[in-house]
Image (cartoon, rainbow, N blue to C red; front, top):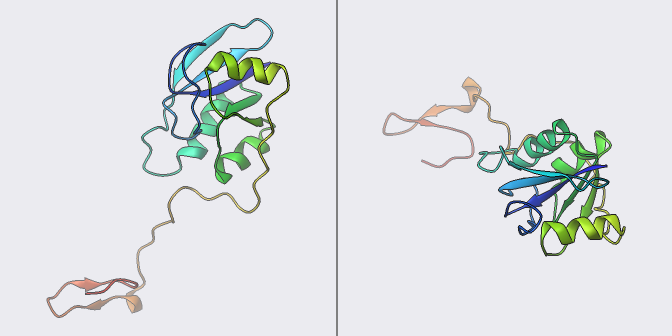
Length: 146
């Protein structure tokens, strides 16, 4: 089985990461052959939606399971929808995380509930009735003070 371990280091002796969406890289590993590759996380510097982007990246790279310290609800939903299981680790190296996964000693992450959001709240252009001119000629938007 191909798994992805969130990592701060590279390779099997690198440190596993306690975060999923913004970890620096992932170590993808075949649990039968122990062949692995380290790939940089393209979502690490995303301005929003890093968890969703990271989940999509892991899925595209063939992982059937993820080992990480924590995963947010949006990423959790994306992984669950793709049939990718999530297993939680406390700390250690990637190799230790893989051994714990193979021994089935890692707890599964709880399944998130509710709709998937795309990172930060969606922005929209205000309606004309929501905008009025400020005393200095600037626009005052809803929810903002002059």
